Image (cartoon, rainbow, N blue to C red):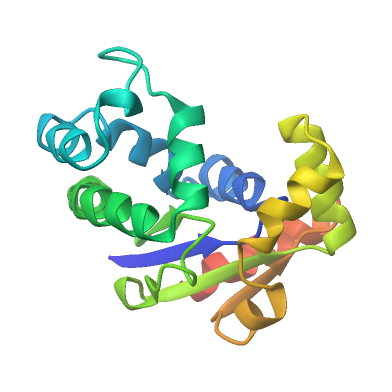
Length: 194
């Protein structure tokens, strides 16, 4: 079974593209952001996180202190590295176990930071979902209910699209917000290649 990463910068529409792969073609999608949130609550992960960062990462046994986590990792690169060193082994072990259970020719691993975190070697191919900066900014502002400056600060933490374009194996251009025919054609074409 092939393991395909699907990535894209904030507001690119990668989640929508993944939803189309899943709902139109039946391709299983592993949403790494959602799954990473679960990893925080594994006993061995929680112990390591509390040892490194204290108990402020957690509001309760079932609730993360997202604001505190964001404040810590966005302002301290070594803290972000330590957090990933604790979370990633459990996340990728979970992904491998999940992938083994799937009955398709390939699975998708959705993550915004495949290139930034140097995860390319874990996958058979990387698909980059792209859109103009204007489109990405508008989408992210609507989705996150944030102002343009806040979104631009987040965008600045990701690699520019042109750098990712040079590394991606495949590209899906996603400008329209609807399930348009051109987007579906690109998805079906990639499906045939995999």
